[in-house]
Amino acid sequence: MHYFFKFYCFVDKFDKSLINSLSNNVSVIYRNYSKKNHLKTIENIKKICKKKGLKFYLSNNVKLAIKLNIDGAYIPSFNHNFNFNSFRLKNNFTLLGSAHSLKEIRIKERQKVQNIFLSPVFKNSKKKKHLGIYKFIKLSKLTKNNVVALGGIKMTNLNTIRTINTFGIASISLFQK
Image (cartoon, rainbow, N blue to C red; front, side):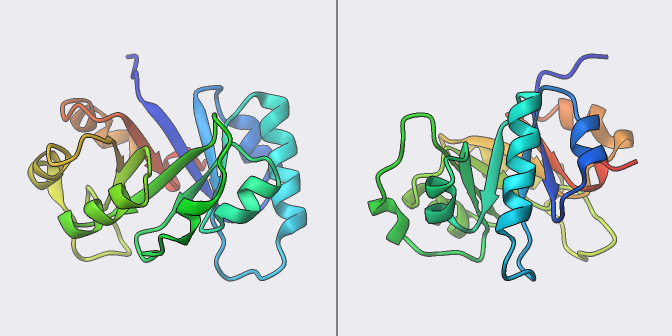
């Protein structure tokens, strides 16, 4: 069965074997909010992604992503800042962002993100609340941006995701062995 989604894999540490196991249609998003000095980790991930031909995005630090010449940045739902809109972005630099509600979708649109990650679509062990398929579809129709499904996505529910006409899929656990 073939899926024609964009795939996004979230990583929070440098795991060479995980990144090497990803197929060429998967983009890597590094998000680690607990580590203060993670420049070496970012450089290592960038190097492997470039070697494999994978897109690489840095979470919550647009300025550093521009400085390190990374493919783009991921702006989490809790980040409501607009100050990075004044940065000079290169042509192929992509902004991604996550949202959980219509209000957050509008914020991401004002932040000029190209892809909005709506989450969580499915119930997972960490979050009690989830959007569900119908609310996901309803919210995704309220924006002209590309919408990516995030949260609780497993191999068992990929067929369900396929029915909702999403631009892509983002996950942490889907890509881990």
